[in-house]
Length: 206
Image 1 (cartoon, rainbow, N blue to C red):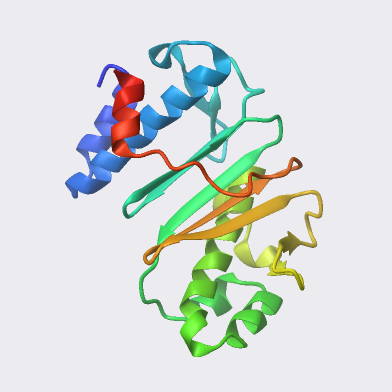
Image 2: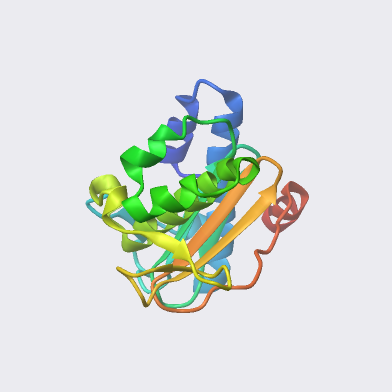
């Protein structure tokens, strides 16, 4: 736990479910280990700050972008390059599709409604995570209304946002229960994520 900040330990202690606390702590460890490699600093020596919307960044290396998300059995981290980054992972669960009408743009809602019944839930989470990754990359959090922009696929099933043409998007279903999305404000994203197991992370720490 020496590589976890006092703030994170206090936050983890407030979680009702132990699994949530566990993911929160592991998320910080993964972040510190990864950013240590990019900055040359020891994981424990890294310090973080947040902008007025809550987006974290390195206190003394603001030129090293990163973003983290965790849900269900997964922790997602994106880092590297020079462009602002956002990532979101969500556990897929049954949901009232009327939520789309509240939070999605009209075009996204129409796209979702046109999907076959057996694909609609997956498409909902694909859209949701893509939109979350975008607002996290922008760094404005939910102060940016989710229905103020639209992310839709082209004929090649590449995702684009007409309100942010320079941004690149990535979407992947990680397994039967989890959806991943990432966004870069300029640079292209990898074609697939690197999977780090708990055993791998333990090796990095030790």
